[in-house]
Image 1 (tube, rainbow, N blue to C red):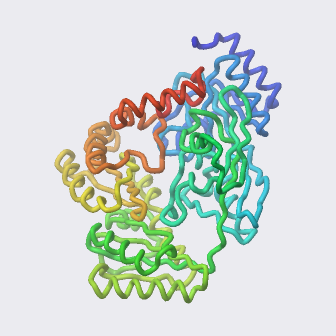
Image 2: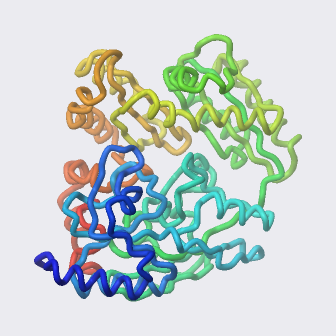
Image 3: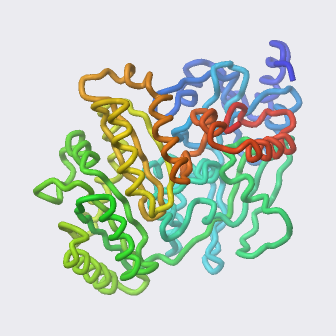
Amino acid sequence: MSPPSTAMRNAFLAHCRTLLGAGHVLAGAADMAPFLTDWRGRHTGMALAVLRPGSVQQVAEVVRACARWGIPVVPQGGNTGLVLGGVPDRSGEAVLLSLARLNTIRETDALNRTMTVDAGCILQQVQDAAAAHDCLFPLSLAAEGSCTIGGNLSSNAGGTAVLRYGNARELCLGLEVVTPQGEIWNGLRGLRKDNTGYDLRDLYIGAEGTLGIITGAVLKLYPQPKACITALAALDSPAAALRLLALMQDYCGASLTGFELMSSFCLQLVATQFPQLPRPFSGQHAQYVLLELSSSESAEHAVGLLERAIDAALENGTIEDAVVATSVAQSRGLWQLREHIPLAQAKAGKNIKHDISLPVSSIPDFIGRTAPLLQQAFPGCQLVCFGHLGDGNLHFNVAPPDGIPNEAFLANQDAVNRVVHDSVAGFGGSISAEHGIGALKRDELARYKSPLELNLMRAIKSALDPQGIMNPGKIL
């Protein structure tokens, strides 16, 4: 399809002003600017306009207009993504469709343990609304104060509680989606079992807005735990962390809800950039694991489980030291160490990020093999390795050597990616665990997916979005 003419674009924008009101069709550079730059500040796109619908019906009407005039659509939630999935390219041909005004908690069914929400609801808003009904929505991310449910589902977000509760896909029972033709599919069913053909819900989750626009969701809720206990363990290696994971699972079972690996360099970086945060240990250790246990019984039960496990790990030499939070404030302080790693990286300068997943059993060998390969290829580079060891997801980021300008090192991004991603593939892993593909990893996906997989994905895209107007240039 050829791009629409200037007259057609003007007619389209006039139609959108009629649909949404002129105040929700942003076409000036200053008005659009906050929507067009990605969270990391690495890319600024261009758009024909930023559209801000206030209802699902308005989303459908806008998409119908886009299909009619041949205008590409880039959906955006909280714009916290890391792979350029929610920002347009620099052609200026697409409209950016912000879901921010769709922010209503539609219904809470505490007996069914479900909540139906608009896609533009902020994650923390959903967490708080669940807590008000003495329930838990367990998805938890560093960006939970600004990311949206639609974005979480579109990228199949993970976070810190995947070990116990699963990714966003496992936390969603039903969806409402506006198709590329501007029709509204109402799949908002709060059912745990629904074996009636193809699972369309799972098709749209993780599709990054390339197949349709998620406008609503039915989310799973859980009972609020009676207590959450946090501890920080110090270890000498990733292999010891893996042994600790097995020990904790043996002792604590499903009570183990968080298991976060952090290298010594990660916590040194946090200490440098955020000196006000706690320093739990007087000395340095090679690795650290942040543990969280949740109990449905009592704080005493959770503390008992944790203390028995920690004692066993100290006795057999799996860990070198440990601190257990004895208050909510201390627990929050330990979690801040983990949550501030990305913020410390951003303050320290730019880096080359990798969001990878591996078989849990392979993580120590992967780190042991890949870190030397990076040092050999890029002497002095600094590895910021942390992540959700319990579910096999590592953030394996590479920062410049001391004294090397950021931009000079970023010129090596393709070569750094090749070292890391080839090693990931060699261990049977994935180059994207929870951030998605977007535009940033599109070419990498083509390198590591088989031709058959890519052709099947293209067939789905072509069948659902034959005009190719939904988030073009992303994933495929």
